[in-house]
Image 1: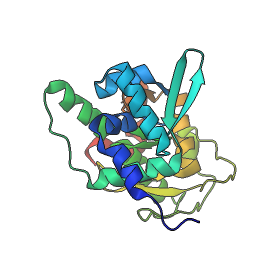
Image 2: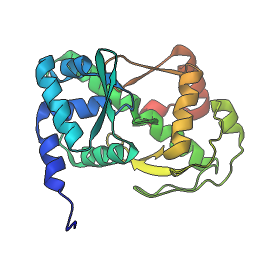
Image 3: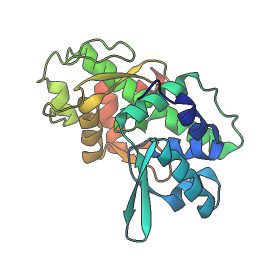
Image 4: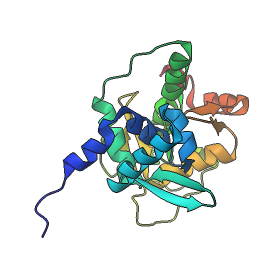
Length: 230
């Protein structure tokens, strides 16, 4: 018989800085080899394996054997939501060196939050979808609503409206750098897929930041205005 949840179990898994770095790495929604997570956390491969086991036992990540590799991914969107919420109250890490400052700025400008765009770009895209009446005004941490499934802005973005499934079509996710909601859910995923397919953004190796391409820069400025400064 269950009495209550073991929240301390999850907290212990996240309390180790190396494990926390690994979780932030897989927050991009992709699978990562343990060796890549070891590099991101600055630990040896054997130590990374132990950390991954701890995270897996806590239900935070999944591990899939593939040949000689073991690929690690976040357990699902509900875990991504929890990590993003924790990021809202977590203090920023001290910036040590130019590379850390550049990485932090890249994450603020555009990044993935599990399977949808975040950062200044994600917030600006969400604001445009709300302004155009495609989705209703988003309240932080709530399930949103689609108002119009067809609109020229969706065509400009190249978004194919996703079919209804088990996950919410629209969900609000409070952006931890911008402190404003960005779009998650099935529609948020479709927006990220469209940006990648049109090569307006590209994934950066080794972190969650998205690199805006020259084509994307021009197209996004036409659609959103000076979104970096918004």
